[in-house]
Image (cartoon, rainbow, N blue to C red):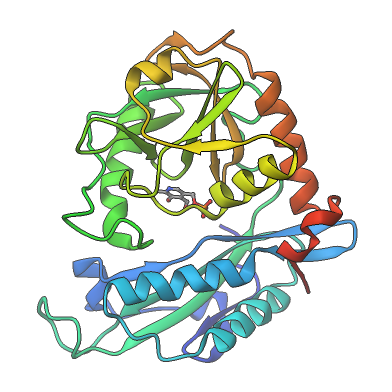
Length: 304
Ligand SMILES: Cc1ncc(COP(=O)(O)O)c(C=O)c1O
């Protein structure tokens, strides 16, 4: 990681190298943190943060689901994000707001500790996450089941969800695949380790509903709205493993992944085994949106 710019910690911009926490920080031991992943794109009209208010809303919603009180307003956090990106002097970057129970007392009960907030960003060039963009990702259906929403709120983007996701990602990578596909406790398709999933069959596009123990992805929402604006409907309904194997095309969406094609699952070809035409077109139209080339969605960009 290139250590450039500043990190916003509890209201102050500190040099990247100095953004440190104590080893007894509560969140390090008990996963008591929530966070966001946001992109800033280097568009022809300047740097722009994609769907900033929606990400800030989701951050606060994640905190609420864990009864965590972020000691700043949404406006203050949005301003902190913009300030941090500007201070970094990066034209395109990945932005990571984080709220966590900090250092104070040790023990499971988090509420005696203060909620610390930071905003970091680092260089993230277009096409950084390559798997699936150009050649199509090879995915493995994970043996790890997505955490059930009866166990913890899966609509929250909380660190607590990610040991499950990291196990699935590592299992896939260690077996020679690019990414995992996770099933939920009902045996239905949930999502990738860090992406939502869409299936195309006979011209119909389907994605699992929000109650399938998935994250309410902002790229998922963007793609549903973009496809709708382009005359294509997305149906939200449960997807089975058989639906995956019989699909014409499969693609995944996420802030880091953008739109990536899935061309093999468990070593079986999906469709022709190549990136399909609908996915290809969507990849292009999504990049037009984030790069400010689609006037209909300029409202999603916050120019700096
Ligand atoms: C588990 C999971 N699902 C889906 C997504 C996609 O969400 P978004 O499009 O908001 O990045 C992510 C990305 O962070 C994720 O971690």
